[in-house]
Structure formats: C-alpha cells, structure tokens
Length: 84
Image (cartoon, rainbow, N blue to C red; front, top):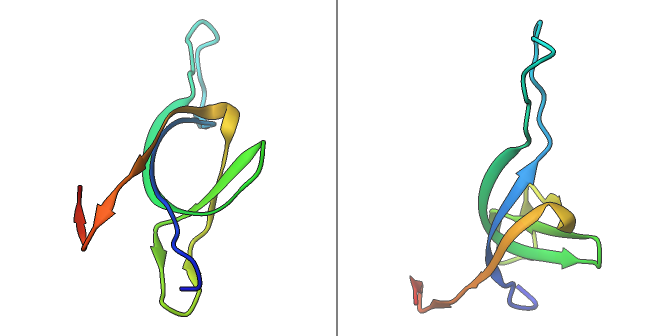
C-alpha cells in the first residue's frame, strides 16, 4: 500500500425498509449498525471505508456512510498485527 489507512470503529444509523403490509400506528425507526473498516477517503459530509485492502492498493467493497448518521467514531490502534 502506498500509504497507511486508519482502522476505525463506527456506530451509525442506517436507513431501512419494512416490507409488506404495516399498521399505521407503529414506529419504524432506523437500524443501528456497528462497522469496523479501513478509511479510504473522507469529506465534510461522508466517509468511505473498506473491510479489506490488498498490498497493491486495491480495496474490497468500498462503503460510504453519511457523517450525520454516525453516532460513535473511534480510531482503532493496531500494532504488529494485534489490537492495542
């Protein structure tokens, strides 16, 4: 990899759908999600992460999360292949 990517933990709210016939008097909240991944890029509005990186600058399954949906954000420190 040409540069080290930060590893992060995110807790965020996801938009979701409730299929089928539903009662109008029920609440249908967003789904809480926890994610760990490598930061690929970041703007003021969103962050892009990946669950896997190769040694030739390739990322698997890039995933964009809107920052206004993030509830928690922590950098994960990694030393010699083990969590610090």
